[in-house]
Image 1 (cartoon, rainbow, N blue to C red):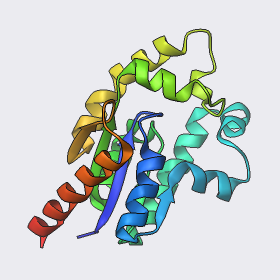
Image 2: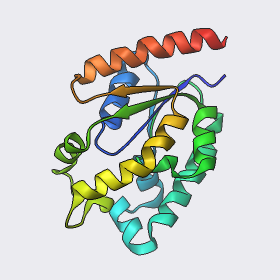
Image 3: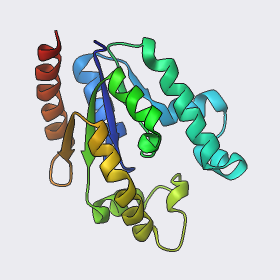
Length: 175
């Protein structure tokens, strides 16, 4: 059993922040897949999208997930679209306990509006893009996750505490 905690969810749901909180609490190293891809490739995500397209970025995500199968005792915060491929969904579940962070479209728009590093939202109607992508991705998040947590009205500490308690229970039942 891989004792990793994997965070999935749409952009702006708090995966990176919750990942840092969990890393500090558990003392597990944090792997942020988006940051690791940028570090390994030497280009920003918008650059990768612009120069090679979204599929090239999704290929990088899959390769990265495949390389993580040797890791245990990590917090893994993923990019919002990583669940788009069936292979990735299987890899995520094999890696450990998968937690889906959920937020309403309006909350996501508010949280992401200050960040230009979101290539999928750089358009005339980012709220419509969020709604359209959520319609496609929500069933995929649901099928991948062991647990879903709505983050809209919770503090980061409350979300972290909920994940800690549920992960301890999950890992205790797997031994």
